[in-house]
Image (cartoon, rainbow, N blue to C red; front, side, top):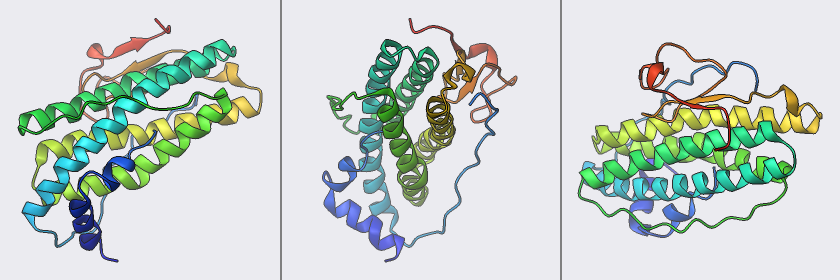
Length: 232
């Protein structure tokens, strides 16, 4: 099925399929991911604009839920004695909140409704929580955000495209961090993981231990980065 047909189906379904699609979202240097490149579609600008609003609302829901969920996962990891993994979840929670706020601003600037979100999730063991995070980040970075970005481009909504791209590129990094944390946990090598993180306040880009002079995604000066070295 062509992508244009898929996107038109998303527009027609309004509040159903899109909102359901947003459930859930190392010590080595992780390279900055590049912007996704996908084939153009024939969707009309009007339909793309309508779909972009729905996509942003869904992304806002997903990021808001992920931020709350990762905060809870951080607390669980700390209770289980995995401080290093707790710090990773804490850093990701902060980053996801930045993504949610960015999506919210784009919606508000367009005069659109920002949904009221009550996050729903289940906290399990740290190992299971890491697997859940990997599943969520994989979906967002491999499918959801790439498709949303194509639609925003067809709508010629540059602000939406920037916000979606910020989240997309950060989620790619989070995915690798979670995979590294799971591997460390399974090999009983959690102490090798970083305990200090730096978050770009503009895009949520997440760095471990050290930073460049400017964010690799938004070019924000590292002097403005949020340093996380404790759970407080």
